[in-house]
Image 1 (cartoon, helix red, strand yellow):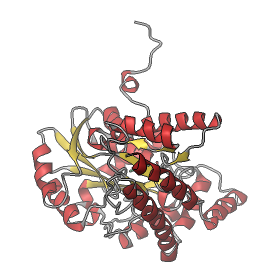
Image 2 (cartoon, helix red, strand yellow; image 1 turned 135 degrees about the horizontal axis):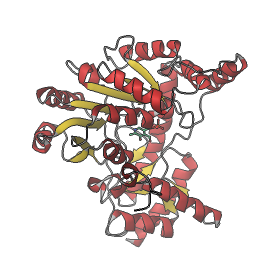
Image 3 (cartoon, helix red, strand yellow; image 1 turned 90 degrees about the vertical axis):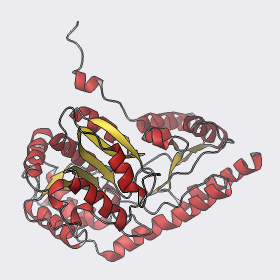
Image 4 (tube, helix red, strand yellow; image 1 turned 45 degrees about the vertical axis):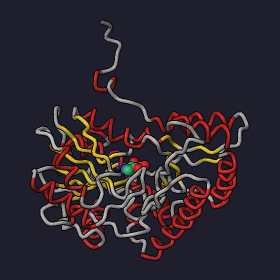
Length: 389
Ligand code: PLP
């Protein structure tokens, strides 16, 4: 066999379907087709000026040399203070690490905790890269349907999905793609399950600041959970900083040593001026977050009302900037058909639910992080769907 081939670990990896969809939409737009874009996944707002200014200042001050690979001290201090006060996580100095965005944080978290042959429980539908991170770590994905596993059924369903090889749970609240926010009672029940069976949890809290209904409860704030939880955060969604690539992970030992080694050996630390810009992000007050939520709430209400008026059943998302309505026969028999129908006949792009795992089939994901005009135009086009029905 020729040696001009990639390593087996790479061959087993997929490449995000969402990227393929994005490329397809871009090629349609280049050909002059008008598409109202709802397939994306990033904030429509710009990074706040104060953060951009802090980066410019860092460059002017020649803060351009290697930073410590786990993060600069002033940023780490602010991170610890933030998680202690806002997330109620009892983190001590030394229990935070700066990483290159949420995905990198998840990468180092999975590689730190999952051994080949381990089963990883995933509440599903789930954010697509998770599947690949588990494959890369040599684990096996065990899905727990998150539409069914709500309220009192959560504990029962987790118990039913437990295998002798289960070691890690991936948990994401607020959830991409469903917009679900787990209640305090649910988070408590997950915590009790993890403690009872001595499991480790990777808690993905990327959307912690985009919650409309209910409260965001950090799993690591619950008794007994700090030592068994690796909590992954990112500045991408909270501060409209997707392109800056900065996140952080909170964990105790022995995890922190693993996270440090993997971060050193993969990126050797986040760009120094970016870290100084992030320091400024931690100075944003409550008014900033209130405005952010208000902007997304207005968009959520408009889109969900339009989807429902068009005959698509849609749970009101309690958090994130995604709505996850059910498809109906007027659109097609499965989520890919519905995606194509909506794109080709109505000029609206979305993401087929099955891209987020088998439990997402029968749904489409719409990202409402866009202008009100775009949402209004989509609602108008969707109204035709009901007339056609
Ligand atoms: N976790 C979830 C659930 C996400 O949806 C995303 C981004 O879309 C991330 C983590 C990672 O975000 P980033 O790598 O941009 O920080």
